[in-house]
Image 1: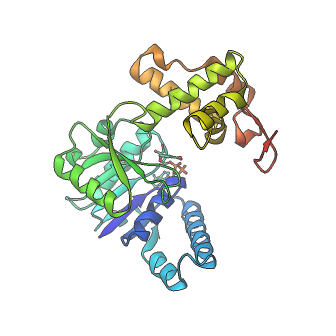
Image 2: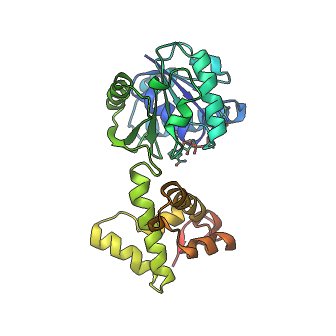
Length: 286
Ligand code: NAD
């Protein structure tokens, strides 16, 4: 079975790798040659490491990479039973791409979006097959993270949902049914917790205490503030704003401290300062 992945960035390249590892014939499509080159180079390097560590043989590497092809044209979605879209999170761009995929793909092809929070129903409205469109939200890094959130649009039919769920099982993912509402499932629970942790720092709590509370009291591998620094304070704030505006509910009010941190350029690990300080290698400075 052939799978096409449109977008060869952080998520698309990992999703393409995931399908190739599971035995699917994959084409990873991107408009930018530089993105395709980078995706290929990263995957090649990763598999070289796997061979060097003895996790797979040179033969297995060749076999997997032989199933993973790269293309600069959307016409190559032809023949795919499933198309996974992973282009940037912009509704107009997603709708344009879905219309183009709809035109080129076979009539029975299912098209899923990896959107983190855009409306599946709106994306599907750009096609003439809205019953065969749904959300399939992978987590970073896609080959490693076991969860796949499935999101049905208003028109998604049972056959499409069942097929995507079945395919998810073949690539080793566990699915959850998330509502077509802001944040889907994981981010709706996780991000308000990170926001609440920021409120506690604003009220005078020590960031290390807040993180230790959740790591040692709840067995979290990473504290909510460490996670915010890791993801990016600006990214986390953007998701919180999406929940706030999407639900029109004050319970999702973004913490003002986050706004000030972003204005000050305290974006977390990537800027060297967030709730904690980091050196040039991204290591926390105590
Ligand atoms: P990215 O910027 O790393 O990659 C996007 C890719 O799409 C780029 O390579 C770009 O060249 C390509 N692209 C742009 N226009 C295109 C077009 N017209 N046709 C084909 N390719 C095109 O972005 P990303 O982080 O991989 O995110 C992709 C999607 O996945 C977004 O919807 C995002 O919200 C979602 N997502 C991201 C994460 C994450 O942790 N980054 C996690 C889950 C979901």
